[in-house]
Length: 250
Image (cartoon, rainbow, N blue to C red; front, side, top):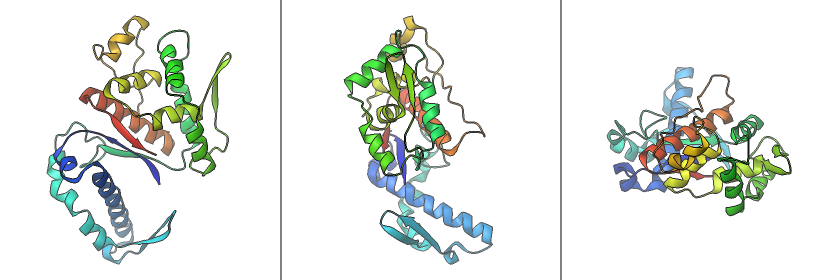
């Protein structure tokens, strides 16, 4: 289980399969790659490696040959990924990434640390306005937390005097707000994953007149959840540059 994230770019695979079917097939391809990796380690044929996957609906037996048949459309359309600027995370269909569950506390802490240091100037003013305008209370993330989808049972908070932003709110703003291209630039500013923009240039950055440069670099010391969050922000930056958005499906 995971938060699926993909760059919504008009392309031949997406036009042929549809976004939902493409995402499902990419997830199935992940099972294919899992079986092939296990087979290499065991010195066996993938067809001979039994894999049982535990999920919310019970245990599922993965059949390699069946998965190969189901994912055939991906192989048939894979050539369209060559040279695609959204193809970031894999040789093909690298427009798709994910944040695996449970999301660890390090990722919540990393996200809160990205927020503006001062709410009295931009982009801090934008953060407060976004929380109020979108009515971000964190309820949907608290429900995820109750389901065990976040490792920390309580969550974290960042205090600005009398104003507090919880990690529930920070995650809800990221995961559940439907973005348009202009709003995607705002998110990069809110979460501090771009180089600092002087207050007098914030509006120019939101309009695309000032380049947004990625600062959420992946490192070997990152926890899996932090690494996955960073990949989402790199995808978001690419989406801004391509004039589109990143869709997230918690």
